[in-house]
Length: 221
Image (cartoon, rainbow, N blue to C red):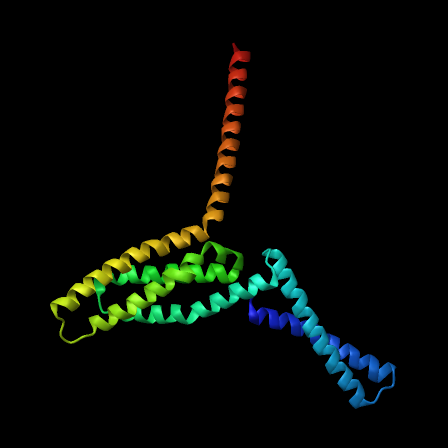
């Protein structure tokens, strides 16, 4: 859920409700100014809370999630956020121009997975390998790679470790690309279905046009 938008919507409901309660109490029920103000504040808080509960209920219903499921998903997405920031900072600080494009692409893929699962939390279940395994591994490997790379003098053992770490990072990137594909798998299936429907429709139109043209030719004969 978009926190800022949700807050604005709640305030748009709470403020008029608070003003309305105060107006009724002070102007029509002859309550004192302080009593009417206190009740209006309580009414505004109640309206704000109720609007939030209703908004959250709609959000959970839309994505077919229970409160427990959403809490679990949100917790994992929130825990991943600082890891992704660390990874982005480390990847983009590596001074290796030939691999820059690949590193930028990896950041873009990871950001896309994060964005999709945050916007549509049910997709989290398709991205579990990313959140529970691949993200931690790529963060740890990248930071160790950066540490070894920053050493002023590299021994043969360090150089070997750098090569092996780089190779493993490239392999992990392949798995993370697959994670994104898995998150998008339902969309791809739906798109393929729509393509098949469109192709059948086009085929039917062409067949109909062919039959019509054939009929016109026979009439002319």
